[in-house]
Image (cartoon, rainbow, N blue to C red; front, side, top):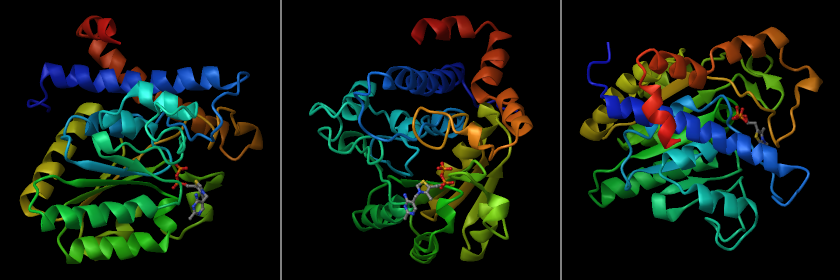
Length: 291
Ligand SMILES: Cc1ncc(C[n+]2csc(CCOP(=O)(O)OP(=O)(O)O)c2C)c(N)n1
């Protein structure tokens, strides 16, 4: 199935799955009771699959414009763990001199930007893609959004412009079914984000599995097509956050998510599944030395 997925790609995917997960866990562990990281944080535990695979395809000149659940995409864009953590501690050695914290984490050195105004970053990705075309650059712009973000009007203005002006944008929607504590079925008529994008004449893909190698093949094709045609594409991935909406504290005591739903998704944890699949081939031994 994945004949073009080399051994080094498999290692790199696992490395990023583990790096992103472990970074989240370490921050969560250190947050309280020290309370020296004085910024709200949206952790991406459980949602590591997309950034870990996307990492394989992006060059330095490509840019990511992310939603607020950004840590994984920052690391996947080649961001520095040290500078990110310094940022969270409010230090001047942080990515933004300690002024942005987690919610506005951005780093021009690796062309990574995020913001807390829901869906705002998505429109910036479109503007950046226009600049890339105007300046005759070969790079692409990636916009990351959640299912809740898809309910903002600016998304549809941006999709329209990207399609009409033929701009090289990869739109990624991480659909974790919840906007804060409210499930999609309580918010919208149509829960599939991609079906709202099709009318803009944008090619859409839908991923409802946790298999990194299958996702690799899909993203490889999509990104090659965007680079060749200079037209935008949209990919929606069904995913789940294991942590609370914000902060290291859990929020499942509000009972907004059924227990069996949480357990089902934990059984599909991409990190554990991929570790198992690689262990079978003893490949994991080599990776463990790296992480
Ligand atoms: C313009 C705007 N409206 C509301 C909010 C408050 N807010 C922050 S996160 C969030 C939910 C976002 O849900 P989703 O896009 O699905 O991302 P998730 O948090 O599930 O990863 C909301 C409503 C905001 N930050 N900006």
